Image 1 (cartoon, rainbow, N blue to C red):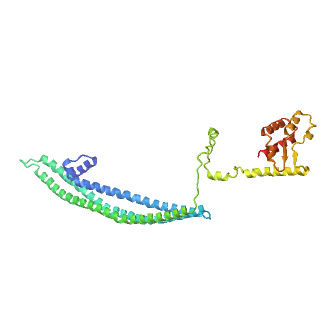
Image 2 (cartoon, rainbow, N blue to C red; image 1 turned 135 degrees about the vertical axis):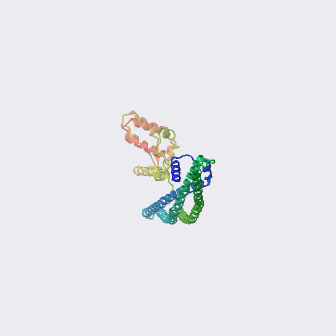
Image 3 (spheres, rainbow, N blue to C red; image 1 turned 180 degrees about the vertical axis):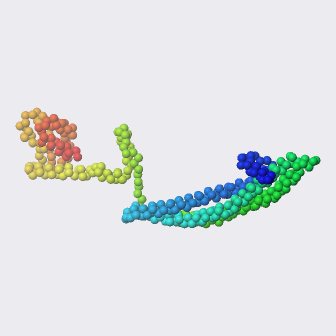
Length: 378
């Protein structure tokens, strides 16, 4: 009853967090260090098992998504154009990567089962041993407390309290023997547990490492071959239009520095905004060739007056007489048309044209002036 009383008292004090004697705590320093290692092994195995479960699940999801993406690219790239061929090649490579990724799941599942077995057997057995050791330590420390209490009541001269002291001392010896045995078991089992965990990881993770290395090598070779195939086909040059419009000040101040970035747009509008001088000159040449020939048919002479002064003498306007006097010496010759304009100044022709613009009745004369301007200065 006395021993059980001290054991219960020591258990309650431990639950309440009462500080132990420093000498007793220091004597169990090695045991406490091993217990910390055991707690670390137990917690890390639990976390590793959860991570492996999530890892293999997300690995399956990723492989499924890669297969779906590869199938989509293969279906969307059915065609004869180069972009369709690129999509088919990329889809095949991504589908192959998704299929090969599942080869890593086998070693992961094996590692998961190994960790589960390790936790279910080795860690559970170790936990039961630690529980027995903790119980023996509490009994041992309770016996020490009982012996300490009886030693204060002991009177060596009269022998009072000697029997109680001997009972406590005997209980301390028995508790010490059990505690030492369980302490040795705990120390040895924790060392074996750490070694077994390292052996398990080195054996199982080597298979995972080989599988992952094989997977990455195959996928890298496939993607490299796909990239080489894409590089062999003609490339397309893409440009990004950074600004859709520019400010009015920039366009007015520096119109020559504005260079469109879209080369495809420049190529599309190149022919539309290009001035072809040969095509523009061809109708004028035809007019120059046709009009003198018709005049030659009407008048057999080689040179004629461009302006019929007789038809304009009846007009009473003074502007017409001055215009006729200005153009009376201008003649067209069928053989050498440009020689007749050498003696006629361009300024005179422009002055005559201004006079005709002020007089709206001389429409026919204005048409002749426009023709002379185009013929003389193409």
